[in-house]
Image 1: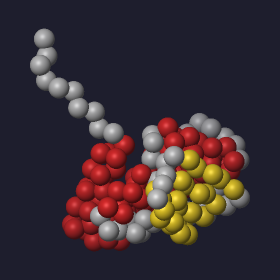
Image 2: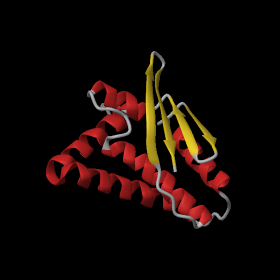
Image 3: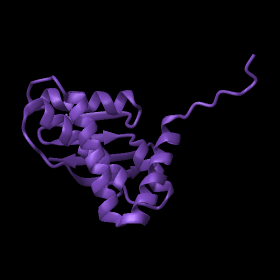
Image 4: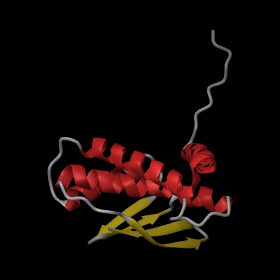
Length: 147
């Protein structure tokens, strides 16, 4: 019989761990280096998520929205034209607790890279996702992105 307690990590725990990792990488290679590493990792993951699928930008964005919601990184993702609204962003909540503005942290760039990678894999078109704004409110954080 196993007497050890099973402790599962929730999404906030995972985001906190990744934010810690990003900050350690930033200490080693600087802010631009950490952003580059996380954006590259996100893009590679995005390419894997979109691999073998061919379609338009709408299909690619649907894959991204499903990933963010399924992994509980966001409560909701609204896609319109060349923009996205990310509601209830767990990454932004962890960053807010650390006094870091959402959209500027290396961990945010992982998400931007993921959008880029899925879009490229599905449509064959390269894009560069950029942070537009973050709104902090009682229910959490809403981020706006464009490409």
